[in-house]
Amino acid sequence: MQPDPAQKRRLDEITINLRERLAEAHERGWLGEVEGLEITIAAAERKLAGMTRQIHLGMPAIPSGRQPDPS
Image (tube, rainbow, N blue to C red; front, side, top):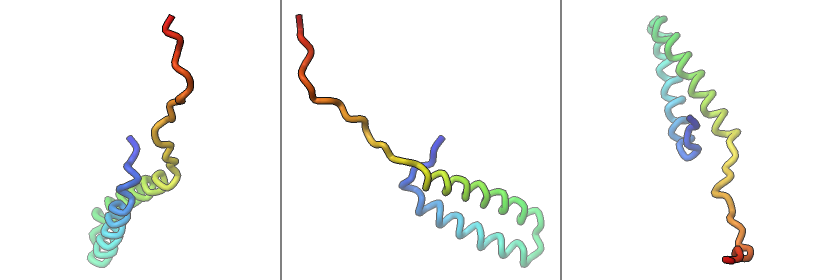
């Protein structure tokens, strides 16, 4: 399943929030939380990287050439 490129901004915001939570977890010594957040951030960054590599091809063009012979 490919993430919707239109949601890139939202995923950027989520990643920023995750980094803030990671900093707090480090400050408070929540090692289990640190590990989970690092895994989640890595996954979000992979999705973001995939979104920037996607090429939107749009709908295929249908040729408007001559109509087939009905005979």
